[in-house]
Length: 383
Image (tube, rainbow, N blue to C red):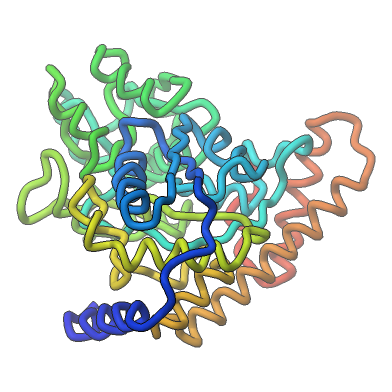
């Protein structure tokens, strides 16, 4: 994005805050689920919470969760108003993996508020003693798989796909949560897994006795990028310039936005609007307070993504002059996608199924067919 455009966007956002009423209409306590206490997402919410407390008297309570289910369940149950989470929220929208559970889940009406787009990124950390720099070289490497975290596990699958490999080509080591895999790496139980370049997670690995390197995803590897985007088209190439063991000229990563601030469709519009305003207007007071927090800047936002936005957030971005016709068209199509998913789930749930296995097979087939017929990419046929 050109610097001139960034300056215009920043000026527009600042103008929204001039002469507008004081931020209000927020509960005295707002709960936000996050990754574990060692994560960048948790540290950022703690920093943002300190600003909200001093400026508005609002107590922001981060609730750490080790996997996608534990981060989203409080949101679904109304215990938390927001979640600062990874791409697992997309799987909840789609009703796949753990979110295909007919007892509790199915496709979820999630809504984006904003995303963190930093100069760092989620990457594939590895023991430097192995001498591995490319995913194609990872055959036989001990790789972490997190129980109950399809987002992180599919991320590993996508990274392996870049190199033409699958889970079957590596030695899988399972851990109960994100923090547990970090412990396992430090203890020498596993050799590779997911970490965020500019966070305490990779910092801990880099500071361990083993040290830490990154697996690389060169932009000019056309076959690798064809494989990864066919498997997971929401990945994009990025030269990461911030983080632990990242040189000044950067490293080629395959990334997606992290964290994403999300809520549910039924969240009160005014509350979401005011929270979005607070995130933007108090940004200068927390941008340097936690690793990667600068990525929440308004001018870094991507308002056309793979999930629809909440009405309260849309109202703020419209007032800031950042919400375009293209963003609205993308949003409308995503709402239509969610409706197709909800209608199909309701139809499958209403049918009789001999057991959970029969239900799972019926849902997978019906979901794939319905999305295809509606003109959408189903992304997942089976899982």
